[in-house]
Figure 1 (cartoon, rainbow, N blue to C red):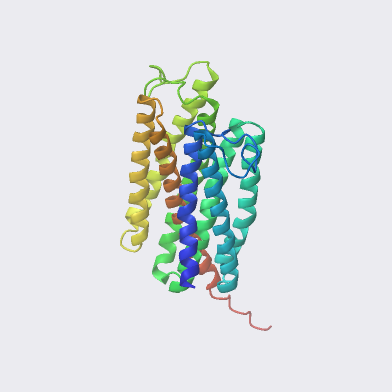
Figure 2: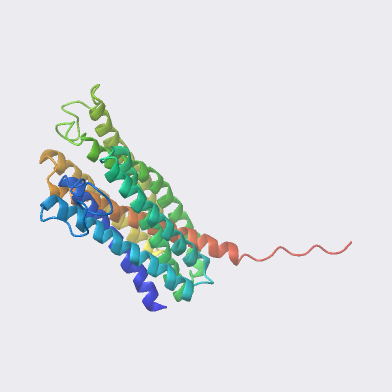
Length: 311
Protein backbone atom coordinates (compact mmCIF):
# COMPACT_ATOMS: atom_id res chain seq x y z
CA UNK A 1 0.00 0.00 0.00
CA UNK A 2 2.85 2.38 0.75
CA UNK A 3 4.33 1.74 -2.71
CA UNK A 4 0.95 2.50 -4.30
CA UNK A 5 0.67 5.75 -2.37
CA UNK A 6 4.19 6.72 -3.44
CA UNK A 7 3.31 5.90 -7.05
CA UNK A 8 0.32 8.24 -6.82
CA UNK A 9 2.46 11.10 -5.53
CA UNK A 10 5.08 10.44 -8.22
CA UNK A 11 2.32 10.66 -10.82
CA UNK A 12 1.22 14.01 -9.38
CA UNK A 13 4.68 15.52 -9.74
CA UNK A 14 5.20 13.90 -13.15
CA UNK A 15 2.03 15.72 -14.25
CA UNK A 16 3.53 19.02 -13.10
CA UNK A 17 6.66 18.24 -15.15
CA UNK A 18 4.48 17.42 -18.16
CA UNK A 19 2.75 20.80 -17.86
CA UNK A 20 6.16 22.48 -17.82
CA UNK A 21 7.31 20.56 -20.89
CA UNK A 22 4.05 21.42 -22.66
CA UNK A 23 4.48 25.15 -22.09
CA UNK A 24 8.10 24.88 -23.25
CA UNK A 25 6.77 23.48 -26.52
CA UNK A 26 4.54 26.54 -26.89
CA UNK A 27 7.24 29.01 -25.79
CA UNK A 28 9.71 27.71 -28.36
CA UNK A 29 7.12 27.56 -31.14
CA UNK A 30 7.51 23.80 -31.46
CA UNK A 31 3.83 22.88 -31.40
CA UNK A 32 3.97 21.84 -35.04
CA UNK A 33 7.49 20.43 -34.84
CA UNK A 34 5.73 17.15 -35.62
CA UNK A 35 2.98 18.13 -38.06
CA UNK A 36 1.30 14.73 -37.84
CA UNK A 37 0.07 12.58 -34.94
CA UNK A 38 0.92 10.11 -33.43
CA UNK A 39 3.94 9.81 -35.73
CA UNK A 40 6.45 12.59 -36.31
CA UNK A 41 7.07 13.41 -39.95
CA UNK A 42 5.69 9.99 -40.78
CA UNK A 43 8.01 8.01 -38.52
CA UNK A 44 8.34 6.86 -34.94
CA UNK A 45 11.79 8.43 -34.52
CA UNK A 46 11.75 12.23 -35.02
CA UNK A 47 14.19 13.93 -37.40
CA UNK A 48 17.20 15.72 -35.90
CA UNK A 49 15.52 19.10 -35.84
CA UNK A 50 15.11 21.13 -32.67
CA UNK A 51 11.37 21.71 -32.94
CA UNK A 52 10.65 18.07 -33.79
CA UNK A 53 12.80 16.85 -30.89
CA UNK A 54 11.07 19.20 -28.43
CA UNK A 55 7.59 18.14 -29.54
CA UNK A 56 8.57 14.45 -29.51
CA UNK A 57 9.92 14.85 -25.97
CA UNK A 58 6.58 16.31 -24.95
CA UNK A 59 4.75 13.34 -26.44
CA UNK A 60 7.11 10.90 -24.72
CA UNK A 61 6.59 12.53 -21.31
CA UNK A 62 2.83 12.58 -21.92
CA UNK A 63 2.88 8.86 -22.72
CA UNK A 64 4.92 8.19 -19.57
CA UNK A 65 2.40 10.10 -17.44
CA UNK A 66 -0.38 8.11 -19.10
CA UNK A 67 1.32 4.87 -18.08
CA UNK A 68 1.74 6.14 -14.52
CA UNK A 69 -1.94 7.11 -14.34
CA UNK A 70 -3.04 3.67 -15.54
CA UNK A 71 -0.63 1.93 -13.16
CA UNK A 72 -1.94 4.02 -10.26
CA UNK A 73 -5.52 3.05 -11.13
CA UNK A 74 -4.61 -0.64 -11.32
CA UNK A 75 -2.84 -0.68 -7.96
CA UNK A 76 -5.51 1.51 -6.37
CA UNK A 77 -8.11 -1.06 -7.45
CA UNK A 78 -5.96 -3.78 -5.95
CA UNK A 79 -5.22 -2.16 -2.58
CA UNK A 80 -7.87 0.56 -2.02
CA UNK A 81 -10.94 -0.86 -3.70
CA UNK A 82 -13.04 -0.30 -0.60
CA UNK A 83 -12.08 3.39 -0.28
CA UNK A 84 -14.29 5.57 -2.54
CA UNK A 85 -12.09 8.65 -1.97
CA UNK A 86 -9.24 6.74 -3.66
CA UNK A 87 -10.78 4.47 -6.25
CA UNK A 88 -13.15 6.96 -7.85
CA UNK A 89 -10.56 9.61 -8.77
CA UNK A 90 -7.97 6.92 -9.64
CA UNK A 91 -10.33 5.33 -12.16
CA UNK A 92 -11.66 8.68 -13.44
CA UNK A 93 -8.12 9.80 -14.28
CA UNK A 94 -7.76 7.10 -16.95
CA UNK A 95 -10.44 8.38 -19.39
CA UNK A 96 -9.39 11.96 -18.64
CA UNK A 97 -5.87 11.15 -19.82
CA UNK A 98 -7.36 9.54 -22.93
CA UNK A 99 -9.39 12.68 -23.65
CA UNK A 100 -6.29 14.78 -23.06
CA UNK A 101 -4.35 12.72 -25.60
CA UNK A 102 -7.16 13.11 -28.15
CA UNK A 103 -7.25 16.84 -27.51
CA UNK A 104 -3.50 16.99 -28.10
CA UNK A 105 -3.98 15.20 -31.42
CA UNK A 106 -6.74 17.62 -32.42
CA UNK A 107 -4.45 20.50 -31.49
CA UNK A 108 -1.90 19.24 -34.02
CA UNK A 109 -4.43 18.34 -36.73
CA UNK A 110 -6.11 21.75 -36.48
CA UNK A 111 -2.74 23.58 -36.35
CA UNK A 112 -2.83 24.94 -32.80
CA UNK A 113 -6.14 26.84 -32.41
CA UNK A 114 -5.83 29.03 -29.30
CA UNK A 115 -9.08 27.90 -27.68
CA UNK A 116 -8.12 24.21 -27.92
CA UNK A 117 -4.61 24.90 -26.60
CA UNK A 118 -6.15 26.73 -23.63
CA UNK A 119 -8.58 23.87 -22.99
CA UNK A 120 -5.69 21.40 -23.24
CA UNK A 121 -3.87 23.29 -20.47
CA UNK A 122 -6.95 23.52 -18.25
CA UNK A 123 -7.63 19.78 -18.65
CA UNK A 124 -4.04 19.10 -17.57
CA UNK A 125 -4.79 21.05 -14.39
CA UNK A 126 -7.94 19.00 -13.85
CA UNK A 127 -5.95 15.78 -14.19
CA UNK A 128 -3.52 17.20 -11.63
CA UNK A 129 -6.43 17.69 -9.22
CA UNK A 130 -7.77 14.17 -9.79
CA UNK A 131 -4.37 12.61 -9.19
CA UNK A 132 -3.91 14.76 -6.08
CA UNK A 133 -7.28 13.46 -4.86
CA UNK A 134 -6.06 9.90 -5.38
CA UNK A 135 -2.77 10.45 -3.54
CA UNK A 136 -4.35 12.35 -0.64
CA UNK A 137 -7.11 9.76 -0.37
CA UNK A 138 -4.48 7.06 0.05
CA UNK A 139 -2.58 9.15 2.56
CA UNK A 140 -5.69 9.83 4.67
CA UNK A 141 -6.82 6.21 4.51
CA UNK A 142 -3.44 4.91 5.68
CA UNK A 143 -3.20 7.34 8.60
CA UNK A 144 -6.74 6.57 9.77
CA UNK A 145 -8.64 9.67 8.65
CA UNK A 146 -9.00 13.14 10.14
CA UNK A 147 -8.74 13.85 13.84
CA UNK A 148 -12.18 14.83 15.09
CA UNK A 149 -11.12 18.30 16.23
CA UNK A 150 -9.79 19.23 12.77
CA UNK A 151 -12.82 18.39 10.63
CA UNK A 152 -14.82 21.60 10.96
CA UNK A 153 -11.71 23.76 10.53
CA UNK A 154 -10.61 21.77 7.48
CA UNK A 155 -14.01 22.22 5.89
CA UNK A 156 -13.94 26.00 6.37
CA UNK A 157 -10.47 26.30 4.82
CA UNK A 158 -11.32 23.85 2.03
CA UNK A 159 -14.42 25.82 1.01
CA UNK A 160 -12.37 28.95 0.46
CA UNK A 161 -9.75 27.04 -1.52
CA UNK A 162 -12.49 25.64 -3.77
CA UNK A 163 -13.82 29.15 -4.46
CA UNK A 164 -10.31 30.29 -5.40
CA UNK A 165 -9.95 27.29 -7.73
CA UNK A 166 -13.08 28.23 -9.68
CA UNK A 167 -11.73 31.71 -10.41
CA UNK A 168 -8.24 30.36 -11.01
CA UNK A 169 -9.63 28.06 -13.72
CA UNK A 170 -10.66 31.17 -15.67
CA UNK A 171 -7.21 32.70 -15.13
CA UNK A 172 -5.50 29.54 -16.42
CA UNK A 173 -7.72 29.26 -19.49
CA UNK A 174 -7.23 32.91 -20.41
CA UNK A 175 -3.48 32.55 -19.91
CA UNK A 176 -3.35 29.55 -22.24
CA UNK A 177 -5.46 31.36 -24.82
CA UNK A 178 -3.34 34.48 -24.52
CA UNK A 179 -0.09 32.63 -25.09
CA UNK A 180 -1.24 30.90 -28.27
CA UNK A 181 -3.31 33.73 -29.76
CA UNK A 182 -0.33 36.07 -29.96
CA UNK A 183 -1.75 38.52 -27.41
CA UNK A 184 1.07 38.13 -24.90
CA UNK A 185 2.91 41.16 -26.26
CA UNK A 186 -0.20 43.22 -27.02
CA UNK A 187 0.29 45.44 -23.96
CA UNK A 188 3.55 47.25 -23.36
CA UNK A 189 4.43 47.87 -19.74
CA UNK A 190 3.03 46.55 -16.48
CA UNK A 191 0.63 46.86 -14.66
CA UNK A 192 -0.87 49.22 -17.23
CA UNK A 193 -1.50 48.42 -20.86
CA UNK A 194 0.64 50.73 -22.99
CA UNK A 195 0.21 53.48 -20.41
CA UNK A 196 -3.52 53.01 -19.74
CA UNK A 197 -5.49 51.23 -17.04
CA UNK A 198 -7.93 49.90 -19.63
CA UNK A 199 -7.07 48.27 -22.97
CA UNK A 200 -7.76 49.89 -26.29
CA UNK A 201 -10.15 48.59 -28.90
CA UNK A 202 -7.65 45.98 -30.07
CA UNK A 203 -8.94 42.45 -29.38
CA UNK A 204 -5.55 41.18 -28.29
CA UNK A 205 -5.16 44.00 -25.77
CA UNK A 206 -8.60 43.19 -24.37
CA UNK A 207 -7.65 39.52 -24.05
CA UNK A 208 -4.36 40.40 -22.40
CA UNK A 209 -5.90 42.75 -19.84
CA UNK A 210 -8.76 40.35 -19.11
CA UNK A 211 -6.11 37.85 -18.01
CA UNK A 212 -4.49 40.47 -15.79
CA UNK A 213 -7.82 41.58 -14.28
CA UNK A 214 -8.77 37.99 -13.45
CA UNK A 215 -5.33 37.34 -11.96
CA UNK A 216 -5.67 40.47 -9.78
CA UNK A 217 -9.19 39.44 -8.72
CA UNK A 218 -7.80 36.07 -7.61
CA UNK A 219 -6.12 37.89 -4.71
CA UNK A 220 -9.56 38.28 -3.07
CA UNK A 221 -10.40 34.56 -2.50
CA UNK A 222 -6.75 33.88 -1.72
CA UNK A 223 -6.82 36.52 1.02
CA UNK A 224 -10.10 34.98 2.28
CA UNK A 225 -8.32 31.62 2.43
CA UNK A 226 -5.32 33.02 4.31
CA UNK A 227 -7.57 34.75 6.87
CA UNK A 228 -9.52 31.53 7.49
CA UNK A 229 -6.33 29.51 7.86
CA UNK A 230 -4.88 32.08 10.27
CA UNK A 231 -7.98 31.89 12.44
CA UNK A 232 -7.72 28.09 12.52
CA UNK A 233 -3.95 28.04 13.08
CA UNK A 234 -4.27 26.50 16.53
CA UNK A 235 -6.24 23.54 15.20
CA UNK A 236 -5.19 23.09 11.61
CA UNK A 237 -1.45 23.19 11.06
CA UNK A 238 -1.57 22.05 7.42
CA UNK A 239 -4.07 24.82 6.64
CA UNK A 240 -1.59 27.46 7.66
CA UNK A 241 1.10 25.81 5.55
CA UNK A 242 -1.23 25.79 2.53
CA UNK A 243 -2.13 29.43 3.09
CA UNK A 244 1.50 30.51 3.30
CA UNK A 245 2.40 28.47 0.24
CA UNK A 246 -0.43 29.86 -1.87
CA UNK A 247 0.31 33.44 -0.83
CA UNK A 248 4.02 33.03 -1.63
CA UNK A 249 3.46 31.33 -4.98
CA UNK A 250 0.85 33.92 -5.97
CA UNK A 251 3.22 36.81 -5.16
CA UNK A 252 6.08 35.22 -7.13
CA UNK A 253 3.69 34.38 -9.95
CA UNK A 254 2.62 38.01 -10.29
CA UNK A 255 6.26 39.12 -10.26
CA UNK A 256 7.20 36.59 -12.96
CA UNK A 257 4.23 37.73 -15.04
CA UNK A 258 5.49 41.30 -14.86
CA UNK A 259 9.04 40.22 -15.77
CA UNK A 260 7.65 38.36 -18.77
CA UNK A 261 6.19 41.60 -20.07
CA UNK A 262 9.32 43.63 -19.33
CA UNK A 263 11.63 41.09 -21.03
CA UNK A 264 9.23 40.12 -23.86
CA UNK A 265 8.45 36.59 -22.73
CA UNK A 266 11.76 34.69 -22.75
CA UNK A 267 11.37 30.92 -22.72
CA UNK A 268 12.63 30.44 -19.16
CA UNK A 269 10.23 32.98 -17.66
CA UNK A 270 7.32 31.70 -19.74
CA UNK A 271 7.85 28.15 -18.50
CA UNK A 272 8.36 29.34 -14.91
CA UNK A 273 5.09 31.31 -15.05
CA UNK A 274 3.05 28.24 -16.01
CA UNK A 275 4.86 25.85 -13.67
CA UNK A 276 4.15 28.24 -10.79
CA UNK A 277 0.52 28.27 -11.89
CA UNK A 278 0.43 24.47 -11.72
CA UNK A 279 1.97 24.52 -8.22
CA UNK A 280 -0.57 27.10 -7.05
CA UNK A 281 -3.33 24.98 -8.57
CA UNK A 282 -1.96 21.92 -6.77
CA UNK A 283 -1.83 23.71 -3.39
CA UNK A 284 -5.41 24.98 -3.74
CA UNK A 285 -6.57 21.55 -4.90
CA UNK A 286 -4.95 19.91 -1.88
CA UNK A 287 -6.67 22.31 0.52
CA UNK A 288 -10.05 21.89 -1.18
CA UNK A 289 -9.73 18.10 -1.27
CA UNK A 290 -8.69 17.85 2.37
CA UNK A 291 -11.64 20.03 3.34
CA UNK A 292 -14.04 17.87 1.36
CA UNK A 293 -12.55 14.70 2.85
CA UNK A 294 -13.06 16.04 6.36
CA UNK A 295 -16.69 16.89 5.62
CA UNK A 296 -17.26 13.45 4.09
CA UNK A 297 -15.92 11.83 7.26
CA UNK A 298 -18.28 13.95 9.36
CA UNK A 299 -21.26 12.84 7.29
CA UNK A 300 -20.29 9.17 7.36
CA UNK A 301 -19.83 9.19 11.13
CA UNK A 302 -22.78 11.39 12.03
CA UNK A 303 -25.01 9.71 14.62
CA UNK A 304 -28.24 8.29 13.36
CA UNK A 305 -31.40 10.17 14.42
CA UNK A 306 -33.22 8.57 17.35
CA UNK A 307 -36.07 6.28 16.45
CA UNK A 308 -39.54 7.56 17.18
CA UNK A 309 -41.33 5.91 20.09
CA UNK A 310 -44.26 3.73 19.04
CA UNK A 311 -47.65 5.31 19.52
